Structure formats: C-alpha cells, structure tokens
Image (cartoon, rainbow, N blue to C red; front, top):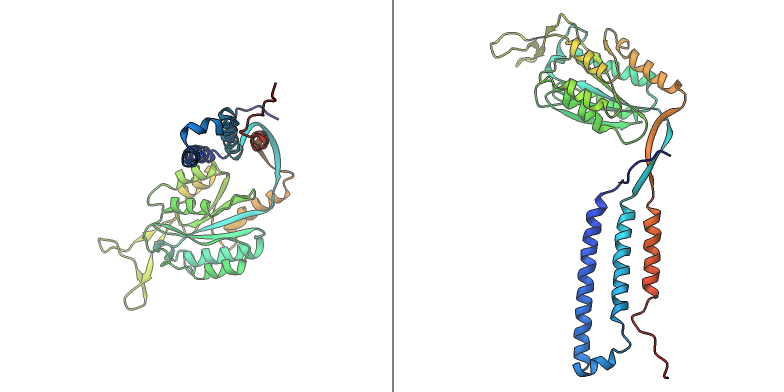
Amino acid sequence: MIASPLIFAAPRWHSLTAGAVVLLATLVWFSAKARRQQLSDFADASLLGSLLGSHSATRRVVKNTLLFLAVLLFGLALARPQWGEVKDEVQRKGEDVVFLIDTSKSMLAADVRPNRLERAKTAMREFVHRHAKGSVGLVAFAGDAFLLCPPTMDYDAFEDEVGELDTDAISVPGTNIAAAILSGKKAFDKSDRRKVLVLLTDGEDLDQLGIKAAEEVAKDGVTIFSIGVGTTGGALIQVPQPNGTPGPLLDERNQPVTSRLDEATLRTIAETTGGTYRRLDSVTGGMADVALALRDAEKKPGGIERRRGVDHFQWPLAVAICLLVVESLLTTRRRARLPQ
C-alpha cells in the first residue's frame, strides 16, 4: 500500500452532515423548551426543585453531546475517508466503439461513389458485421452533434440508425468536429472497457476546435481513429434542386462549392489520442487499423493498472454506533443516595 494524504471520496456529504447537525440542534432546543413548558403547566415553580431532584442536567448534556458526535461521525463515514493507495489490475472486457459520422452537406460530394455519406455508411455496416464484439454507438454531426444510438450490443438497432442517416439529420449547418468528439466521449459509460471513437468525415473543421477536443478526451484514455472520406482533389457538392434533380451547391457569390478532404487535421486529431488516420479508399480499407487495434487489445496479456484509495469509513462508523449505544443506555436520573 502506498502512503497518501487523507482525502474524501464523497465530499458532498460534508454539507449534508452540517445541515443534519443544525437540524438536530434545533430539535434539541425545541425539545428542551417543550419540556420546560410542560413542567410549568404541571406544577408550581416553587415545587419544581423537589420534583426534579433526581434529574441530572449534566447527564442530559452528556447524552446530547454523544448524539451530536454520532451524527458527525456518521457523516464522516458517508464521506468515505481514504488514506493510503493500492494498485490493482482491471481485466479488459472488450471494447466500446462510438462512430462519429459527418452529415454536413459536404458529405454529398461524389468524389467517392455513390457519395461520401453513403460510402461511410456502408463502411460502418461492414465493420460491425466483421469486427464488432463489444458495444457500438452512433453520433451524427454537422454544425452541432447528436447521439443517435447510445452504445449497445443490439447491432440491428445500430444498423437501423445508420440506414436513416442523411444530411438533414442535423439542422445546424457546418462541420463541428469538436462537438462530435465531446458528444462521443459522453456516450461512454464508466466501465473499464477500452473506449474508441471512429471519426468519419471529410475533415473540413470550420471551427478548428477538433484538435483541442482530441487533447481533452485523450486525458480520459479515449482513442480516436479518423477516417478520411473523399479526395484531396475534391468535388462539387451536389444537393437536390427545386425540380428534384441534383445540382451544385452555390455559395453567397452564386459560385459552385467544392469540398476537399483535409487530411492534415484528421491525422493530427487521431495521433493526439494514440490513434491513426486512414483514407477510406475502399469499403473496408480505412477501417483496417481500427480492427487491428481492437484485436491487439484482446491479445494483450493482463489488463489496465488502476490506482485507488483505501477506504477507512468503518472506523468512524464503528465509533458512531458505539456512541449511540452508550447514549441509549445512559439515563438522566441520578442514583438515589442511601440514608445514613
């Protein structure tokens, strides 16, 4: 066991304990006031001295003090005091994979067939069929991000969500990769399984915040594999026209918009978290690194080393119980003196 300073694993109980002590003090005060009122109603003040001769005010104070200490110690136990540190090894239990799929208008470019979005959807389906062993989730993003499918072992439900994807999935225009990464991280539960984000996009990060988001999630052990969909030469973005036929998307100057694959940004995002970047040249080619990384994780002996604090809540809990027992056995009556 490694030495470490005193910490509390659940410090929120400190404020609740303080409130409980204040409440107890209020109840004790009102109880004492009610007793005095009842005695004054029962007998004349001149007779109270003889009637209360066997009552010990000191013992009453001792009982109340024991009760206050017990409440404080119960609160201390609930706050889980810890000192010392131990290391243990958590065995790997598969992997959680959340796909981040770009649904912005640029994904309608047809530099890969039939277009970028449909190629990415097919690649996700193929990956789940061939390699998925843990849970899979889905986040769609454009100018904002939305969790469409929380991590699940129901692959049919996942594929149904993939099939429904289109460029109208997110109403906010743009390509906010940072929002997608942070939404993907929030989708993971607090298990010890490996957490992997697979980012499928053309990489046109308009806000340029994707790399900072990658640095943030890397601190929590999340790995990002970025998959570039498209070509560096680019292509015109084709969108439905009023007559129903596809036509070029026009900018504010009424010029056709060309979208190009930004490989540099995607490579930096992946390498920041220990992942890799690949272009989606074929339906399964870009996912090869992801599948290989997951297979390597399964073959790796042992597990993940984790340090945790050592709980010592049992000590204040035991003392609090003892104080309550003593308080319940202690009476407020003095022992009767034998006549001489």
